[in-house]
Length: 188
Image (cartoon, rainbow, N blue to C red):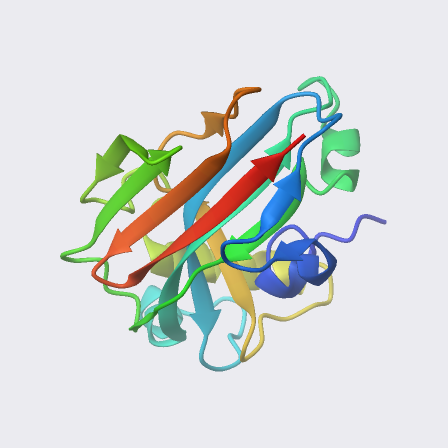
């Protein structure tokens, strides 16, 4: 039986959580990748099968996050990918948060080694609407006898296309204006 709660909910990787601004060695990784994401903190338990309105009300806050992954398996082996936590190796939660799940007025900008390489003013364009993500996670967890609970954190998917990290890359910063930012340094 696969532990499907792990890849979906933020406490999923407490052992893989890196402090904001911390360093990660990507030595030996097959194909290092990074995703700038929104982290959703859940305000109260979410029952399965509820409405999108109820899911929206369950969003306590939004925080910037970066997920680091190592695409080290062939895409034709979904079972191995799921067992390997969907390539995920680390998550970094940023500073600052905004109450509720409203994404209006947010500017998402990603910087590689201090240089801007992408931005969006629509953080839900690639991920879908945040209440739908909360609803989906609650329903999926229920199918495996788990529940989405108060204080859980969902990393909600990349707000910009995932970045393949280059061998010479030294840092990544994701700015979620006006909320805050998150950064990570790389070593080999």
